[in-house]
Length: 304
Ligand code: G3H
Ligand code: 13P
Ligand code: ZN
Image (tube, rainbow, N blue to C red; front, side, top):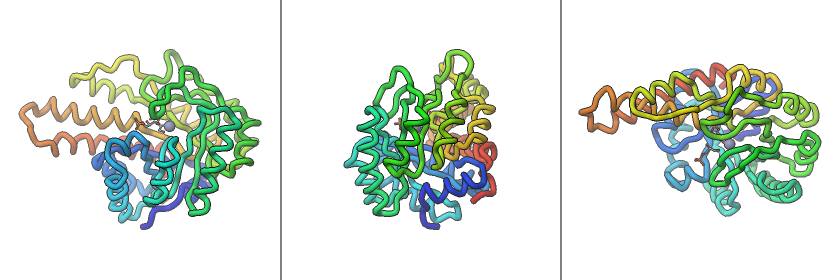
């Protein structure tokens, strides 16, 4: 089925009170694992492609693979994740992406609004959805290092959405990218999320939502990895965020962890193996498993 827009998927999610996962892809096995899970769970999906993924795999390769995936019955949007480079955004639009995230959140409010409004106008002319971010997520986002996160201001959020005309708003409430999100307990600002929800009508997005399951860390470490102190967003927090209006949940680190844990286990179990298909295939199965779990947990199983 043809690719659908982000707006289409998120309006349904908002109405149905569930969230759609946005999974980052970098290669064929990751994409296949996600799509196999979506077919099995009858779930819609958002395929996220970062600027880093484009640098790694190439825009044409990624788009061609997604076109093949879109021959399935799964309703999917092809989304540029954290787009910062306007020229690259234009290339993605021309390539047939159905959704763009313009991330100018590292600028001040005025500049962020100005850039986002411009990109939204370009995208909307072509029927493409637009997501933007207000506030700053701590950590590394496509080579931009943010030392200390800044929470989204609910009043600014309302103004930002009105001025820019965006279709979805990514909020900063204490999550961060990567596998090391909290030193102690998680302390997400649900009070801020509640206020944003009261003032903003467009679907809300939570980045940096990976859980970093301990059993995957153990599996990887048993097979030679040295992952220490990794901590993600607890499942209960994700559930609460969905209840408070989050409709799109971005997941990359959990896929990375599942993929390397699966491959490491295959390498451990079969040290003589020189067939990359066995190693990558094991990573792909691990992606399928974790993607399935997310779909069920986010409530989008059977919502295709
Ligand atoms: O938002 C961050 C995603 O995990 C993408 O990461 O820029 O390394 O592809 P990446
Ligand atoms: P995680 O690092 O928590 O998976 O977040 C990914 C993300 O927000 C991609 O945009
Ligand atoms: Zn993100």
